[in-house]
Amino acid sequence: MTKSTTDCWKVPNGFQQDSSLPFSPAAELPCGIIQLSGIIAPLGDDGRVRERAFAAQVTLIFEAISRRLQVAGLNVTDVFHLRVFLATGPEVEAAFNRLYERIMERVGIVNLPTRTMIGVAWLPKGAQVEIEVHACRPSSQSE
Image 1 (cartoon, one colour):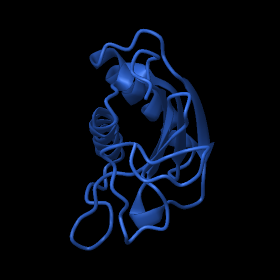
Image 2: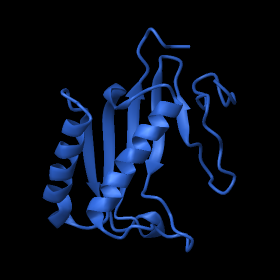
Image 3: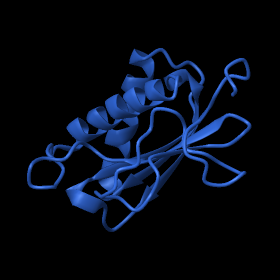
Image 4: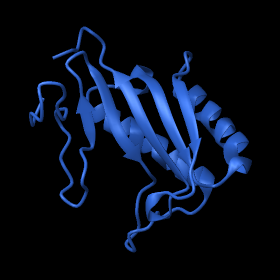
């Protein structure tokens, strides 16, 4: 683990603090639980979410989740909980669920992680979706 913040948690190896953001990209507890900060779709040159389409944002977020987990030495099968924020209203809940099921099936997830879905009035940078990830390092990998 890199930077020691407290005895309770640390920023995992491979994660760098973005000096333009007032929070850590990830936190790891001594027991091997890793939380990734909320992830939105990639930004364009204008500082706003590049892809406006809901389905594209969801797909890009799950690709980013996979890459960030790899940085921590994990993969999507290590995820045990997702917290999903939707700023697009209740009409997209079914669309999100269909996309979610396809993505989970494509990556081979049999035991779906627990999930909380929260409707919000606004998300940063024009995002329609933000996802927070909780994963657990297998005990054989714990540092």
